[in-house]
Image (cartoon, rainbow, N blue to C red; front, side):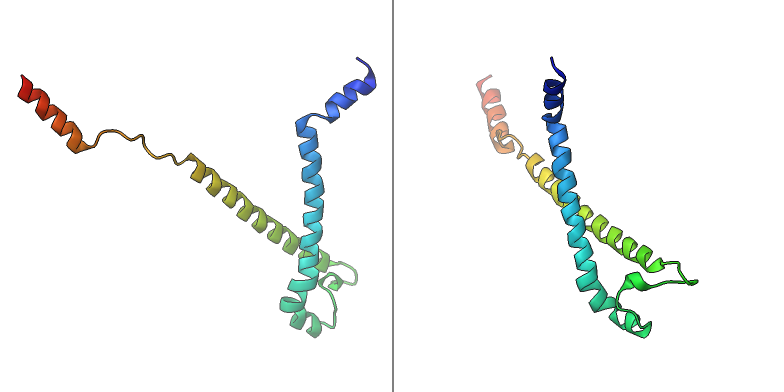
Length: 125
């Protein structure tokens, strides 16, 4: 087997393709979260604090002349939102799995039917 055919076989395995799709979706989701923070969270919740500090974005927060702790705060907010959304997704998946696993018990004779059968068997003796 040649080098390129081995590489093709490796690249076309299900796990590699699934990983590639996950990375692409993760990158797109990261952009959505960043946009959500910059365009929704910051203007609505942090606008008064940023106006008081004479800043337009949270990333501009600095201390000691150059330590950009605003970038850190923004990254922490991004992480919390991503973690929360992933938690909700996993909860939904687990709930869907539980619904699939709940199988009604097999239908069998009721207690009354069993007692009737026992009575009939005793009567015949």
